[in-house]
Length: 129
Image 1 (spheres, rainbow, N blue to C red):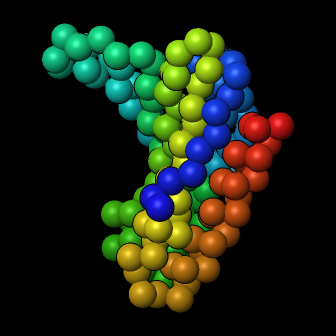
Image 2: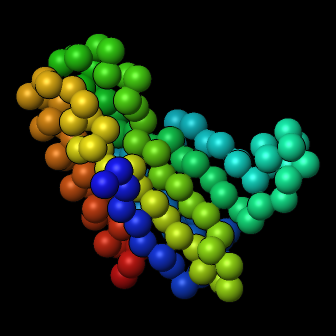
């Protein structure tokens, strides 16, 4: 599977705030953010519920993978999706770093992937409370 997720019984804005805080707790910063809802509205005049893609990066892990395999930057950052599921619920999906970095044969990439997945797993567990 390419992702794992958790559903939160809170509205989108609150969930987004919780996600950012939990990511920081595992030393992940947000290096990119795509407001898919706004893009769809602007480019296609299509209305969808709130949907954000957060590019989460742990600089120490990124440094290790890029030192081992410089082109692995094509597989970074770890994307986290926060989407409104309706009814005051929000789904948070985490890219599975092992699925993505498993495309590399470098042992260092696999080690970083396992650590990144463990960290993101702790974020998901914290959110699930």
